[in-house]
Image (cartoon, rainbow, N blue to C red):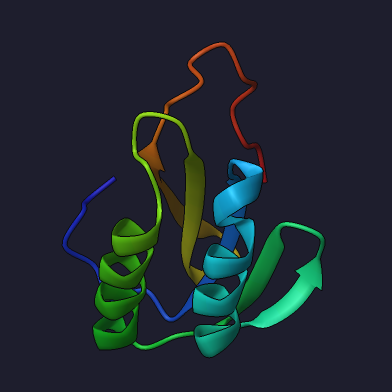
Length: 95
């Protein structure tokens, strides 16, 4: 799937070490509605998506923490991007 698309909606899932969880929660809360435990979702502009990723990279340890951003154009198009530890043995997201 092309990586240079304008996404307008996203889901954020994370698995963060306990000492950084509150900081990641606060960053996500700036951009999205809290959906469930470590899940946020909502509308986001392409510019704010760039800011979100930059803000998250400032507060996590990419060698220990995991964040997945599911970027959606509509209900049939999506792309997944991870920041930090990539758990290759996890199941792929199927919509």
